[in-house]
Length: 270
Ligand SMILES: [Zn+2]
Image (cartoon, rainbow, N blue to C red; front, side, top):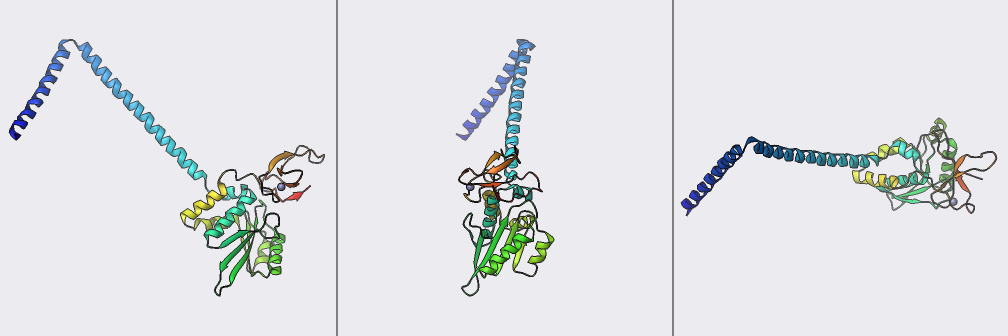
């Protein structure tokens, strides 16, 4: 059987070679024109395949690059932090504390008595370690006044630990005041460095919480809704723009626009 099969295989191989010879004989006998045409169309086809493959691979490469760029765009930097809605910044801080193992909760919106977040961590003897946190998303340095205010609230509530978070940094006076006290001043860059030390998935969670959707438009401190850009029609500020609450005239909370790093978007009322 095996012999016969091998014989058949040899036969079919012979047939192919014979066929090929016949094919070339036919082509050469029927003139070089047909042969050339066949050869040309064969190479044209190859060229088309090569071009389409190149286009396809380029498109995939480009798509990958775009996706990579989108991924890297979602990076929490100091610039991003400083352009962020103050509310989002508070959320970033809250998520950071949670990642650090604290039980972190916001104080009620509007009822900000100098603190934004309350941190709790189980101490040694069943006693919960409470920390008061104040967050300020000002582009200007935080001076001693709000730091002193936080310390005042801590003293009044008999809270031993305090954290003052700022997207920018602190004045020398503020730093001097906090010196030797259980009151830590955390700058924006310091927070970012601490976040960078967390596990990757925690970092991603914080970035997502901070940067998902519209993270730049500020929120109303009274209503916790995104504010709207309004133009002043008051004689003194005619034509100047500001952030106003959606619930105006019921809510009169406004914010200055962060035009430059010098502008202090301090909340003020009409
Ligand atoms: Zn409002």
